[in-house]
Length: 303
Image 1 (cartoon, helix red, strand yellow):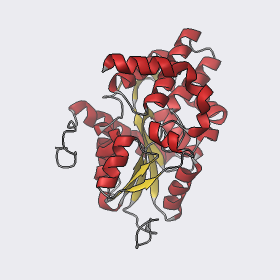
Image 2 (image 1 turned 180 degrees about the horizontal axis):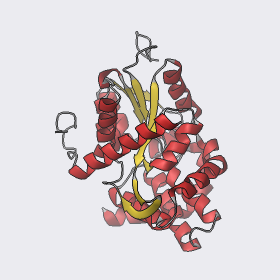
Image 3 (image 1 turned 180 degrees about the vertical axis):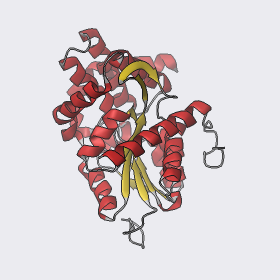
Image 4 (image 1 turned 90 degrees about the vertical axis):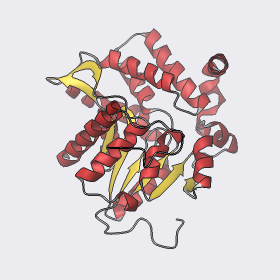
């Protein structure tokens, strides 16, 4: 299936691995769900069974990166050593300072996570994930975004998270928030044990759009009646798929794109400076000071 019809100018088309990752995530989301403003017309439309909503996770539904906090929880349980925790901390500092999802950075995060979970049972990580949600994630949910998701649920619409985080982590968060399910990166497992490999590629950029498209076909959704929410310009392919795209806590590129295309904009960060650089205001200077200088230096070297 060609993706060129919905990709904006100069964005790369979906690869075969993107399609595979999207379809795998859509199937995982359907299995999981089985197991468990600003316009004249009312929105969302109540009783529209062919409409749904898709929410990005990091910096859209919650402050910061879910995978980083999951790593903190695993370190507390002695899954890995202090030097690996420092690597996770560096990755989070970069994410906060840069305010964007750099491809090389995303690959580093992926490799770290896969090496940590390799050889562990899926059921074990799911059980631990429930505890980590209570310890680190529950207090980081943006109330405003949570209210938007609830509005769709109250209208009788289904709501999915769509994230590059592991589908198991995303599924736990979705269940705790009362959402329908989650689309996330699918790690390969054999007989319930992680192999350290992915199915396809991380659910990022075009792969997210492919996952939403596959789920819409499977669930008989009309994407022109659906909504999508994200903070990142990397999710423009997903946002462009639906009839009701929203920019939430947007980075600079997404903010400009949203204004150019008359997309709805909402920013739940409390300080203007935070809106400019993509750092949650509640984080404070101390939370990122340790990684700021190094992140800026690395950025300059890359450019």
